[in-house]
Length: 361
Ligand code: PMT
Image (tube, rainbow, N blue to C red):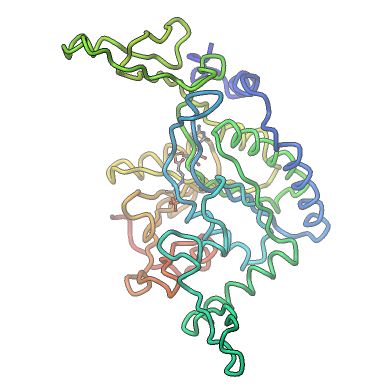
């Protein structure tokens, strides 16, 4: 059945894929939060962007001990969300649980732990045994005040809704529900799909329920070829794990590309859809981004390479100039005080602050 998912019409692939899984437990709660958030901003005629961020996982077991992950720290999504908020958007931030978040990202990364920004003040002179109060070190005060004010503003004015996902199936359920809930926004809705979404998965009906067992290799199996023939298969119906095993062979099916359904079915009429294309081979990037734009007929594909993603992106659009490179100037690539590098942010790019280059790498 699922071997054919990639060959099905998008609407059929949707119904087969979503029938495979029960909806995530958190979905009803997330839908209620999103509905209230969207209603509020529809009433205020405010633009709302759904930013997706972080990598999706593909579990190998239903009671998951092991999983395959997609690369993404959440820097692009969290940084872009801050720019959208600055531009007056309300942001639904659909993110991988524990990945970087808008504002707190400045102080939550492993290389810029918030504790490094703190000091204990000296106790008062008349009570030398008392504890001093915890304070932000003087050199970080200005930057932290700025971040704190923006964070508080977003929170107090209901501009930011944080919704977590972990697996690719959870991501798909959340994306579909949120897109449909955003329909009353019409052209005030924007989709900014920066999450790194798995292209392969193990269908639920072929997944092991419990932790896959790796048995001890018996002492009498010293011959390598004999060891190589002992394999555990996951994602297969017909193969039972052999008793003594060495290899784990994983058999994955393609995840349907739901960008199609988002553009043609789920998203509101007149909304804008921006997708990202990640590649590692520079010679493929523009071609793959163009192909995605043609295939899904949306508004913008932002291409980036894994190795240079923090400094340069390419915009692929249906209208001229079709291909536009934007690069953060070298002088601004230095680390900020908080240690988090600046990034290409969409709102900033749209205002033309990036450094443009003709169509070459
Ligand atoms: O978070 P950072 O560390 O800063 O990294 C940011 C980033 C490199 C992850 C980000 O800038 C980025 O490129 N995100 C998209 C990665 C990705 O999923 O690329 P893709 O080529 O696999 O998919 C292209 C598009 O198809 C995506 O918009 C995705 O939403 C969509 N897709 C993907 C898989 C799938 N099964 N269905 C989809 O619709």
